[in-house]
Amino acid sequence: SRLQKDVAATLRSLHFEVFDEFICEETGYSIDAVITTKNGNQVAVEVDGPSHFVDRLPTGSTILKRRQLDNLGKRPLLSIPYWNWDELSSKKEKQHFLEREIEVILFKSQQAYI
Image 1 (cartoon, rainbow, N blue to C red):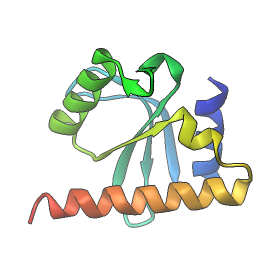
Image 2 (image 1 turned 90 degrees about the horizontal axis):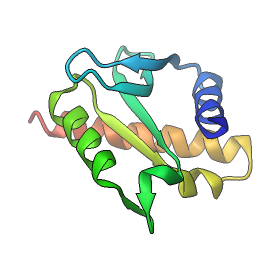
Image 3 (image 1 turned 30 degrees about the vertical axis):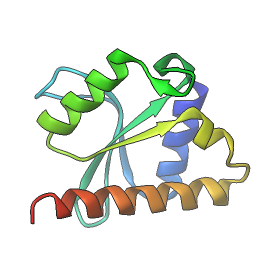
Image 4 (image 1 turned 90 degrees about the vertical axis):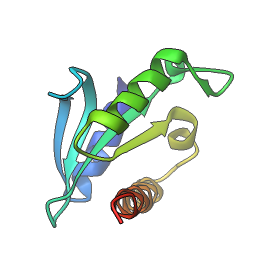
């Protein structure tokens, strides 16, 4: 989708290594993107468009996929709802949003193992 391509392009502009349509070996799910940070951490990125929601609440299949990727996948999962992305107007805002969200998700995943 256009949304997914825009997120991937923004991730690349931040110099992350980006693997599009990554197949998770543990779950069999296709993940929109998996990124590798400069220090080798990986993050799964799901870009969730309108079909993933009903009244901004995730559908059952979206909840199941997130839960299985969180519990069985080997990398933390960042879900980006379309309305969060649509609120960002400039490339700089999009970059800042992704940097912040990735930092938070990596921090949370490290805390889970303490």
